[in-house]
Image (cartoon, rainbow, N blue to C red):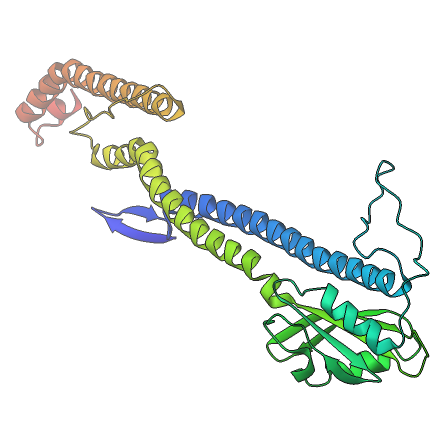
Length: 316
C-alpha cells in the first residue's frame, strides 16, 4: 500500500495494483491456465494416438510378413468383425528354396509408407533395400542393424525404439528361416517418429499462436470492460475527495441498472443524509447563537457599566 498526503493532514491510501489491474490479471491467469490445460491434454492425446497408430501398423506388418512367409495371404484383413472372411489356411504350394528367396518376395510385396524405411538382412548382413526411395536408410543408422540382429537371435519378433541424435525410430524386426535352413533372414521396418508427429506438432504450434492472440484479445477487451464497470467507483473516490464542509453538493451520476449503479445510488443517498445532518447541525448552531445573543448582550452591557471599585455595585 502507498500512503499519499493530501491537503492538511489528510492521507489517501492507494494500493500498489488497482482493482482494474487485479481483475484483469485474474481473468488472464484463469484463461491462460485453461488454454494450457486444454492444449496440453489435446496434444498428448493426439500424440499418443499417433504413436499407437505406428505400433498398430508395425504389428500388422509383422503379421502380414509372417503370413506371406508361411504361405497365407498377406493381404487378408485383420479384423474382429464376424462377417469378415476368415484368414486363408497356409498354402502348401507356396514354398521357398531359401530364406533369401522368401525375403526377396517380402521386400517386393511390402512397399514402405510415408516416413517408413525397410531393410532385408541375410545372416545379419543388409542384403535387400526397398525399390522405392525412402526418407532414410536403415542400413546407415549406426547401431540399429546390430541391435535388431542381437534382439532377434532367439527367433522372436521384436519391436522397440531406437534414438540416434535427431532420429527417433520405432522399429519391428521379423526373423524367419525357410527352405533349406542354410541362412537366416530378418525383415526390419521402422517409422521416423519425429516425422510422424510433425503434423501434430505443427497443429499445436498453430494452436499456441492462436491462443496467444486470443489471450491478447481477452486482455484488451477485459481492460476496457473492467474500466467501464469500475468507472463509477473512480468517480466515487474523486467525488468523496472533493466533498468539504463548504462544498457538499457533489453527487455521482447513476448509469445503468446493475450492482455498481445500485452502489452508486446508495452512496448518493448516504451523501444526502450526511448533507442533511450537517445542515441540521448548522441550523441548530444558528438557532442557539440567535437565542443566546440577547442575554449575552444584556450581560455584556451590565459588565460594561460595572464599577469594580464600588463594593456594592460589584456585589449587585
